Length: 171
Ligand SMILES: CC(C)(COP(=O)(O)OP(=O)(O)OC[C@H]1O[C@@H](n2cnc3c(N)ncnc32)[C@H](O)[C@@H]1OP(=O)(O)O)[C@@H](O)C(=O)NCCC(=O)NCCS
Image 1 (cartoon, rainbow, N blue to C red):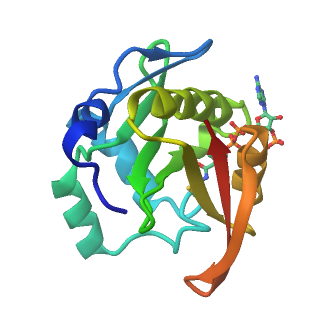
Image 2 (cartoon, rainbow, N blue to C red):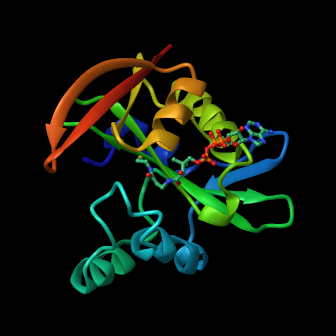
């Protein structure tokens, strides 16, 4: 995933003030590293993402944080429930990805957060006509989430030796 450049940079760096009924969404900081490390190492979270990352990748990712386009999702009292991320595909589309902590699955938090993050992307990242998301077809929770977000399946392909599906939300 490429990083945003030029005119979009400010918007990418400042996802402040996003609130939903139950959640707060803000730019990720280094204080979020312990929760973020779980999203790189927890076998349940990594099940459809190639498994836990290697020690070398872990160290690299630690040094790279906080990344541009990374959003931390918290409950009212500040508990981190997960992360959303915006990158760019090779074709230049804004790409949404997400990773929530398993003890917070099944409450609709990912839906609530991703809805707000999609709206934020359309409103704040100039030139965004569509936002895509890619997931393994076997990742049923993720597929259900994308369908619940009202995104449409636009492509299917094989990557990392597994069937992948691409969904899109349109402005
Ligand atoms: C993909 C992922 C975010 C989905 O998490 P999730 O909690 O299942 O997603 P949602 O927010 O859509 O929650 C939906 C569930 O909450 C339930 N729910 C409970 N209260 C709800 C509410 N108030 N509103 C909506 N749904 C609610 C729904 O019934 C549904 O339950 P079900 O899974 O038993 O059908 C999560 O599995 C994850 O982080 N996986 C690891 C990372 C990953 O694979 N990412 C994909 C590649 S980018």
